[in-house]
Amino acid sequence: MQNENGWLGSHLIKLEVSFQRNRQVAAIRQSLRLIFPIILLGSLANFFDQGWLQRSGYYYQTLHVAKWLFQARVLRQYLRLVSAGTLGLAAILMAFAVSYYLVAPVTRQTTNRLMAGITAVISLKFFNVSRASVLSLRPIKWASANLGLQGILMGLLVGLLIGNSYRWLLNRQKEADLTAPLLLTSGWLMGTAALGLIWTTTQTASLNAAFVSAIQWPFRLPHFILGLFGYSVLNSVYAWLGALGSTTIGGQTVATAQNLEAVLNHPGWHLPHPLTPHTVIDVYANFGGTGMLLGLLLAMLLVHAHQQSRQVAWLSLVPTIGNFGAPLMVGIPVILSPVLGIPFILAPLACISVSWLCIRLAWVPAVAYPLLTGTPGPFLAYLGTGGSWAALGLGVVDLLISTAIYYPFVKWHCQAQAQLDGEVLPDEA
Image 1 (tube, rainbow, N blue to C red):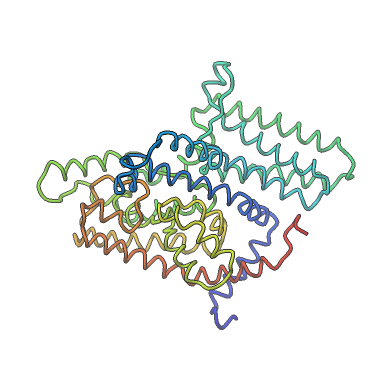
Image 2: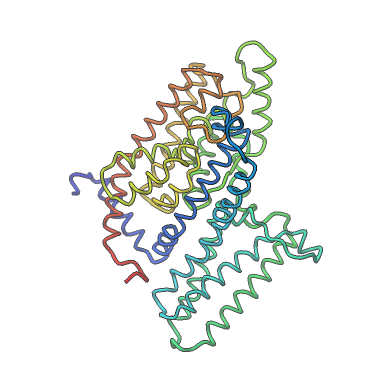
């Protein structure tokens, strides 16, 4: 097996297995498996709502949905409700599940397991409240936007913190003793409420929004090649850690508007901003979502190993084609996978390099027209350039490059997962 995989493959498989066996990572892995069906359902609802039922949707425009679909408004209301009830609770679900799975192996009492999860959920919510409702003494409103996909990382961290504290305590007390868990629960809730109040009254942004801003500040306007690399790597690492929401850089809307104005009001295709995160990364390096997930999906379907990964790939096919990649990130999972983390960073960088060079040398025109939500990745450049076949060809080349980069890593990942799935996970014995 080592000769077949080579030195690099063998060592990466060992690294993946060793990393995933870690108690903390194993709890996260179980939690991601738990919430995958919920994330899949919510992503499908988002895809059909934004891609099929909104004017800015690709299928709404190309299939003329308004002419043949009745009760579209009611259907949109229904899909938005499904999305809010699934994706909108992603961070809460992760906080609960991670804390629960950390505690499960050390106690047989379901009450202790559930209490650890509930404490994590409440603690997370204390940091995601509406500042105005707190300061004005009005009924408290929760910052629901921070409890969805982009808040998964914060939910994961809170779950680890709460779960490990319960685990430590339960390992040092008698099974029937209720006093210590009660005191720990009260202490955590009172403490996180106080910290949440301090943050809310002294900061104008939520904790999650502040974290997103902090990691973006070095690359506010990365129009140069190294800036594009840095922005891509930052986005990939952030998503790999578990924050799956959009991390759009401020100011790009202005550049996009100026590009469109130049095309509409001036002859020729001379754009003032041909090389931006939008014209390079969004169009050529984010097929399926951050990390060129469409390339990962194709590689998963090509690798004849690990049945569960192939099932996840097929189930995630529709939303991933529409650039809603959360199901693939959670279901494989790509999140916190050392083996898949490497191509998750490298594939976009390769696509950025090729695309930047082609645009810089004027071999393909830069994108100027607005892009419709849900447009399949390779068609983004074709439609954004007004039908340039060169841009379409570049998109296809980028997809092939990303698939080729992912392919060996997917093989090694599947072998590692096959080893891990042969083990008995905590609380499943």
